[in-house]
Image (cartoon, rainbow, N blue to C red; front, top):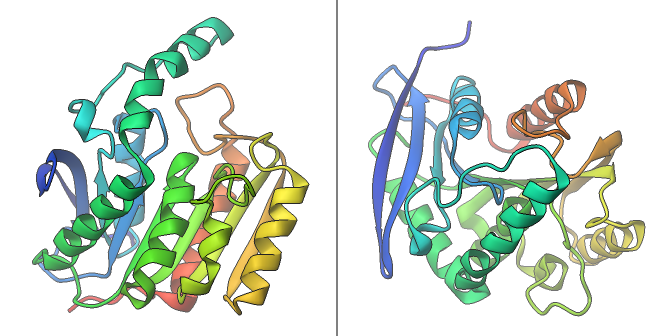
Length: 257
């Protein structure tokens, strides 16, 4: 039986400002393993709240910060209409917002997110999981690499540019720092995850002796987990939940204290 879930919107104090965030956990007053949830580029919104609550309902305390907090509270930009012109205009407007989140700032912020997550009265002390979607998938892997055994499991879903040779902060360059077990899910129609990058990432993880599962979902596009977009795939979304909870069962089981 899925436990009832408590949800709240909270503020997190960071060196460069205040990040609004979603926080959900089983409504039983107990401590549960913590999950740091990295959003996609569309930001915090009702669908991400539902995803956070779904994960919490499986026995986890889940924190989803607005990683674009330097540019304002969520929604930093409204969701675009489902047409090519609106989509292009959205990402053009998002350019300065994404540029403000430099590689160094992203890791600086992740350190604070981890600290504040583990300090919660609803989170079991110790290592947490880091998961992310689209650009958040890249951040989840970079967080696992940067913070070693503070992260027990990490997952990237339709993350882009995970093994870009011309990007110094590409996650594959930092594979040696990863001690977590990984789940990396690609969409077979995702131009940001071409076969050569998938192979390069897997080779880097193999060389670093990282435990990982790499999966390629068929007939899926970049962003397939996002129900409020035109590329959503219900079957792939449900499969990603099964794969995520299988990872957690292996490396990061839900236990209450």
